[in-house]
Image (cartoon, rainbow, N blue to C red; front, side, top):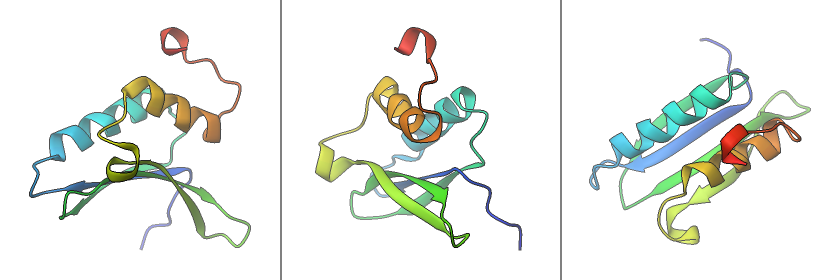
Length: 101
């Protein structure tokens, strides 16, 4: 089985709500902006879930995750620029994002 490369983003989306395209759009935006990302995964789910999690390599070699966005907690979906800022702040602090900043 292939090894996971960090940092990793997991976007969990509701298939019943038909949010695959939204999840794919966020994945494309993040992959285009952050070439240092090791992986962006799309994980299907049900029940109205839409979360974006960032995993970084912990000292024990396993992924340590934090929720960047939760539709139910944060209300709706993130703006792309705020999502990019959140990812940048954890993966590449101090990096400019051009017109997004």
